[in-house]
Structure formats: structure tokens, C-alpha cells
Image 1 (cartoon, rainbow, N blue to C red):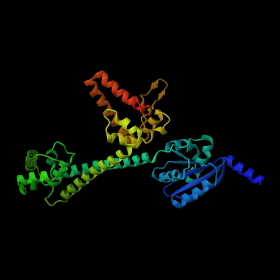
Image 2: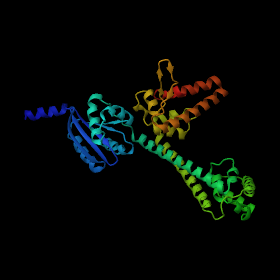
Image 3: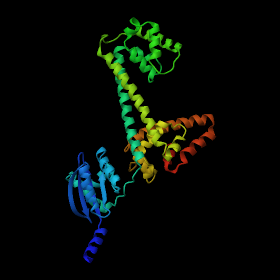
Image 4: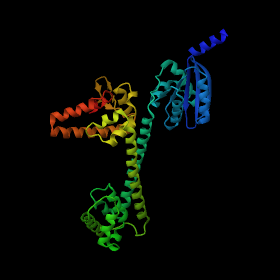
Length: 390
């Protein structure tokens, strides 16, 4: 009985580390106890594999788990560990590369898992901060929004190419070529010969009024119809009247309209989630920042409380400064441009808006409004990095 108690006490003070290398459909697991390899195994990256991993984790007292982030593949492992309530260390790929490069003369998934576990005894990496599921949802929404935005830009470029073949002058009929009225006009009147030969003036006006939910006056519709007629008379199409390019124009317009609605829907859902977060109203109070910018920024940065200081946050975004000097030569400092490119893009545009708004306020009330803007960007300690860029 005493021997069993002693053995149990020894097991409790033993340090156990699980090094896990995540690939597309499997995980390589290395279990190291007090710097001695105990077991190596390979498990499928599915419910079956997670069940076996759970059994292995529960057979040790306070095991440590270390793995390298591998994009969407490691997300499943991370979710499983969160559901299990298991602490873990998720390494940034760049950090893992720097830490393990000297140990990778022969790189395999098995060796990577073993090196992750063995180096944990030397480096004592900190446990990864667990963010609220709300931030994870906002990040997924943000990435979805960025992908849809890219699709919209691609389809607009394709539409421009198609219109250059069939009716290039229609792009100048309206001053705003990025709203519902414009898409309606392009969809209905992309064939110049129809405008001049098949439709009467009153029919064109009626189609313009019925083709959009936007409320416009009859006089405005007549003005658009006159412009459309003038453009159609000058146009010379590069394709036949039965060309499939006309079908392509209608298809692209429909795609753009649907994607634009989807973007608005995504922002609405992001706003509903972000409203419950403390930083939402604080960021929204900064002059120049709107709802779309705020929710996108929160979605990409996540819970900033996980960053130790503003320098770490700047490095995460990729706006930390790089300095180089050798002898008498001193290079100009520049930002690293590593890290989250989407967050850097959003932040760059946000700072441009803040700067423009601040200048506008200064022109109106130089001293008073500058003080307001400065206070709004410095009143939150966790967001003090904004003042450095601002």
C-alpha cells in the first residue's frame, strides 16, 4: 500500500509534455516525461483520434500540450482541447520555425512532435490565452467578408471587360457606378441596339423606375433615359446581338448584387455580436470610425487582452519597426509587414479616416476638437497603440 502511494506521488511530480504536430488529416503525438521519451503515436484528425488523445491526456496528472498552428487544420485540435478544458500552448509558425530550425536536420512530422515536446522543458512556453467564442465567430465573419469583397472586385473587373465589348458608354450614364440603380440600368439596357430600336422613350423611363427599389423622381428617370439614348446612339458593339457576352453581363450583375447584399448581412451579424463587447463602443466613439471598420478591426485583432503590451500587438499586425545599421551606415526604419495582413489593411484605412477627421475638426475648431480626438484615442489603456500611429 505504501509503495502504491509513493508511486502515485512520484507520478504527480513528474512533468509530462505532449508535443503534437498537426497535418491535414492526422496528428503525430510525442509524450515526453521528465525529458525522457515515453511514447510516440499517430492519430487521425477526427473524433476517433480525439477520443484516444483524451484517454492519453487523462492518464497523466496536469499534462502540458504544445503544438504549432497550421491554419484550418489545427483549429479542430484547438476546439477539441477547449471543449476538454485542457490548457495548451499554440505556437505561431514563425516562432516555431525559429525555435526548432536547429533541431530539424531531418524533418518529419514525428520528429517535429518530439522536438516540440523536448524543447518545452527548456523554454517553458507560456500557456495560450483562451479567447471567448464571440471573438472566434467575429474573426470567421471578418474572413468571410474579405473573401466576398474580393469576389465583388473580381466580378466588377469582369463586368467592365464585358461592357467594353457590348456597350462601353453605359458606364458614363450615371455618375455613381456602385449602387443598385446602376446595376439595374446595366442589367436591363446592356444592348445599345435595343435602347434605340426596340424601346420607346416612355418604356425606358418606366423600366428605370420599376427596375430599382431606390426612390427616384420621374424627372430623374427621364434624365437617365436621355443620357442612355445619347450613349446608345454613339455606341458601336464589338459583338453580335446574339452574343453570349450579354448573358455574361446579366450574370455578373446578379452576382454583384447578391454579394453586395451578403456583405451587408455579414456586417449586421458582426455588429450584433460585437455590441456586447466592451471595446465596441469605445472604438465607435473615435471620430471617423464607423460600424463596419470597428467590427472588422475587432474581428481581426480578437481579444487584445491576450497581448502583453502594445509592442506585441504591433508585431501581430506587422507594424513593428525594423532597424538596421552596420558601421557608419544606418538604414531608414520601416515596418516589418509580417503578421496579420488583413488587420494591417483595415488599420491603415482606419487611421487614414481618423487623420482626415481630425484635420477636418482642427479646421473648424483648432484647439477644442484636437483635444477631443486625442482624448478619445488615449482614454483606453489597451488601445494606447492607436495614439502612436495616430
